[in-house]
Length: 330
Ligand code: SF4
Ligand code: SF4
Image 1 (cartoon, rainbow, N blue to C red):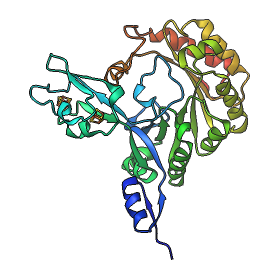
Image 2 (cartoon, protein in one colour; image 1 turned 45 degrees about the vertical axis):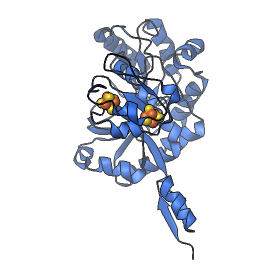
Image 3 (spheres, rainbow, N blue to C red; image 1 turned 135 degrees about the horizontal axis):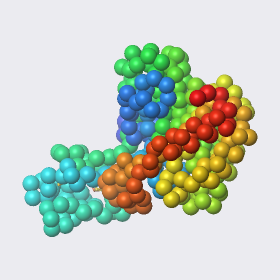
Image 4 (tube, helix red, strand yellow; image 1 turned 180 degrees about the vertical axis):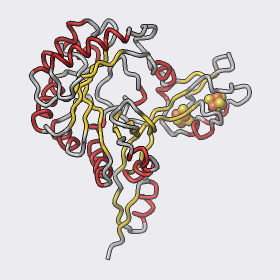
């Protein structure tokens, strides 16, 4: 009889294969962060699981660390104690990614990095850190399980990102696990995925937050990097086929991009043709994630753009809710 073991780590896998043990890999998901006690992403107090990887590259993205599906090395210069007192990263990196820039600080040539993460392990101040960790369904579940009291207070779990549908099998397995213990489940999605993936995941959701950012195709392409046809087709199918799921469409309102009333009204006209929509939320722009761009060596194209006044956006939102006669009455 063959011995079959279930494992997660590939180094262990190789050793086991050498001694003739049949190895089955346990399903893992690549996670950026698990945030507790959120009150903005669904009913009650919730745990938020941020998945890594997104097919869109919105220029206002406040979670740039979730865009790439790969592990990402980040450097927070404010935490660095300086090369004179430390400098271990410069000595440790065989790829010569780090150079000293003369101000007791380091510079990085990320194109040379092979993601061995030796520098992260040696950095005592955590100035160097990595975004992304692979976890099994049980590991994520256990990390959130101590929240049972908040789950009982009508909270739950919301899977966000990045784009959860990029890791549809893992997310489905995770949502199923929560469902088996009666926990309220939600996802936040761009809707940019094959319909089959959305359908597979939706079956295990109580609530879906669905982004429609810009209706004009060319403009959508310019600011997010993808065409919106699939997104618009998927929301139509979703509202038709899953009338029992609570569906909330969201639009982030970004200065000089989609903050004119006509931009929003275009979306509202589209939404008017949908059945079973519960709510429509306008989310005023904020630039909270801008420092993470620097840490990742990315450019934040909206640097210096001020926030929008919230009150007019909330008023417009209330008018739209009435116009659309949404299921969730205001
Ligand atoms: S190892 Fe960390 S703390 Fe030390 S110089 Fe490098 S980044 Fe700074
Ligand atoms: S991850 Fe490895 S290759 Fe990349 S900078 Fe750190 S030590 Fe160098």
